[in-house]
Image (cartoon, rainbow over all chains, first blue to last red; front, side, top):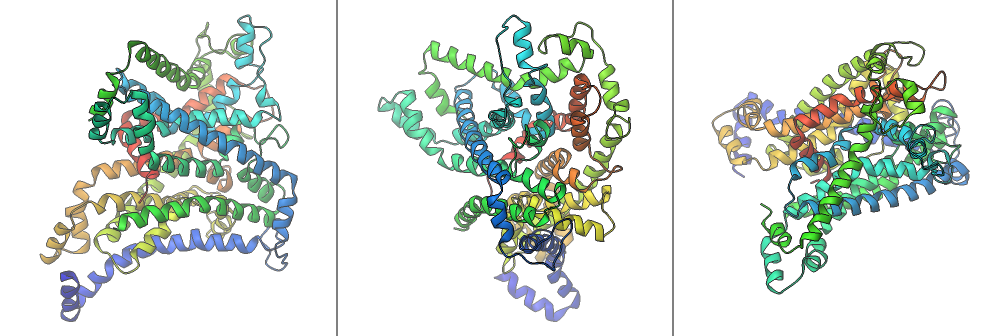
Amino acid sequence: MADATTTARSVVANPRATLQDLLPKIVLAPSFAVILIFVYGFIAFTAVLSFSGSKLLPDFSTWVGFGNYVRLFNHPNWMVALKNLAIFSILYIVICSVIGLALAIFLDQKIRGEGVLRPIYLYPMALSFIVTGVAWKWFLDPGIGLEHVMQSIGWESFSFRWIKDGKMAIYTIVIAAVWQSSGFVMAMFLAGLRGVDNEIIKAAQIDGASTFVIYRRIIIPLMRPVFLSAFVVLAHLAIKSYDLVVAMTDGGPGTATWTPALFMQKFTFGRNEMGMGAASAIIMMMMIFAIIVPYLYSELGGKKQ
Amino acid sequence: MSAPSQDVATRNGVFVRALVYVLLILFAVYYLLPLYVMVVNSLKPLDEIRQGNMLALPQQWTIAPWLSAWSTAQIGVSPTGLKPYFLNSVLMVVPAVAISTVLGALNGYVLTKWRFKGDNIVFGMMLLACFIPFQIVLIPSARILGLLGLAGTVPGLVLIHAIYGLGFTTLFFRNYYEAFPTELVKAAQIDGASFFQIFRRILLPSSGPIIVVTVIWQFTNIWNDFLFGSSFSSVDSIPITVALNNLVNSSTGVKEYNVHFAGAILAALPTLIVYIVSGRYFVRGLMAGAVKG
């Protein structure tokens, strides 16, 4: 309030003050303009493209209505990509959450050496998905990796060739992705556990509740916001998953490990189907926004009070 | 700090505690295994990997794969090793991190201390920009870079990374400055301090932690980026992640696993070092990026 009146007075008094008043907006404007163009303008551009018959280059003279979307959902590769996304995201989210929560609860038992263990669980998060992909690609490779190791130490019949098997290859990507992200989920849960009110637990103990019951009935239900955050982060990472797939299988064997992100890239830049590529990007964005927008809305809305 | 957990813990039996330790250590082995495999096999001759056991220590230690990965390995059409691409990444990361961090700090300052009508909408739009799948901007970005004459150049990648990092940097600083006492800013205003004076003298001196968090976050994300790097680079501007992928997935010649592993570690080294040196801030960045608003 006081601010508003002083500003009003100084505007009249002094032209330099006018500049000072505008300065905050002048400073913010370039960033906002750039976001408007490079994010929202570009989304609009891609949306328009998705209704055009663009092939190698953007082409705004032929229009196909929803034709690209119809072709997309009739294309076997897109359906494979969607099925893979479903398998991948469900397993990725569930396994990361289970491992993350379990590790956090274990670490929260006044563990000696927590300071050593925690960074070990978390370091994969610092790596590029390409590095993770290289490590797991060769470790799971039947020729030199796990299978070879087991056989060379005498377990002749051991077989593990999922990465070469069209039906199983997507699961090897789950293995690598869980390895990369589960430590991060652990850190989120650990922060949540450390924030639980001491008094509630004391009261439950006085009532004679066992450790197991305290976790199941009191602490884990209190972790609901953490589950939600973890879900949002992991789901949006899963929909974007691209690098790891490229590094591990590049979509193979055949098209067995295509994901929507891979589909977009291959169709737009590999097969000169820019219209369909744009349509697939729009579908990806809608999936992410369906998860993120309600979440951000509730987070920001909740903060205002 | 974790008194409640201690209370719970003391009620556990010795057996349960032993089990917890065993599980924790098994998980540590699981997380360390790929790193161990990479390190050990990057120090072996190729024959030893093919015939031997990937989990065994080298019988004959060698740093030849490292030298090859750094300076002579065949990447694409030229036998340059990863060195030039590593330099490309450095040239791309440093300005992109600097620009996005400075702008993020100023944006956060304006959005919290110089509030205006509609500032929440502006912030909301910048926040949502953090989460878009970048596939949706690839086609028009390629066009714009072409129009600006920046297609396939390092400055082009700097521009793209700086822009798409703005959402996160603004988010970090905005949340940090929100907790900063506005009274101090108001008092300085009354004393006649200007917009930039207030920022430089009052906010900046206490912004150390959030600057570190933001720089680490941006550095890690941009260094590790693959999508933009593979879409917008040409021979002279390929970043290290793309070069590593080209090295490993080239279809010609003998697969030199030891060189691949050495290359992977080289590509991971800068972010790993940052993580080891400042893990605390790294984790804070992750959390800030996850728990929004």
